[in-house]
Image (tube, rainbow, N blue to C red; front, side, top):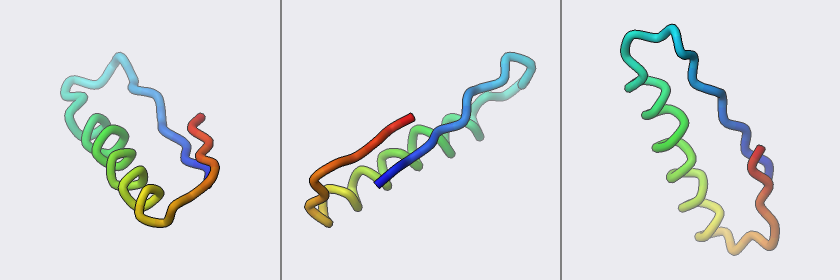
Length: 44
C-alpha cells in the first residue's frame, strides 16, 4: 500500500483542515492496513 500526504502551506490562516485530512486520514488508512494484515506500507 502507498499513502501520500500533502505538505502544509505556511500561508494558510487555519491549518485545521489540512491537519484533519493528513493526520486523521493517515490514522484511518493505518487502521485499515492493520485490519488487512499488510506486509508493507510506504509513507511518502
